[in-house]
Length: 227
Image (cartoon, rainbow, N blue to C red):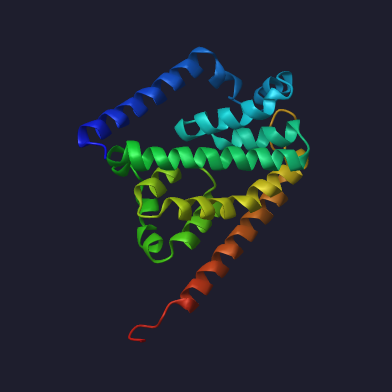
């Protein structure tokens, strides 16, 4: 079993590794290349078949530490057929979520815990009662912001509950963006006029799913004083 000192050294080493990786990425101009979907798409197309791997690796390494995940999921349907875009977007999103969750739980738990916004703290009780359903709803409504990775990482939710709940919550929005990406975004990654009804439909559908899940959870909850 690892000693407390060894655990501290391991955490410090992980933090240093992250900082070095981000510094190298900055030095190589990777942040500039992923600054917008059009630039990212051009870079990946130029890489040929290696673009698949580069997409997932860049998504996994960069999104948990500052690069918006939307840059990647918007770029994917601009490059590949929608089925390929969906698979790669899901792989990158899940990998980035696991990295962000694990970093918050095992490496920087105390530091990140003090910086979680109050608007997310209100879900602590819901996570204790219905962890899986709450993770699904949070991912469905909020997608993959770094602060949500951190919040779930410092919460009491289990790793596999987070993993499967996130997977289920990501499917509707990523599937929609991958399938309708060409109609929603122009080649530069900007929203087209026809995107607004689609986004409104996604929001309404997400809210309806959230309401249905919460109502079902309340119906299954035993009444006070019930045996």
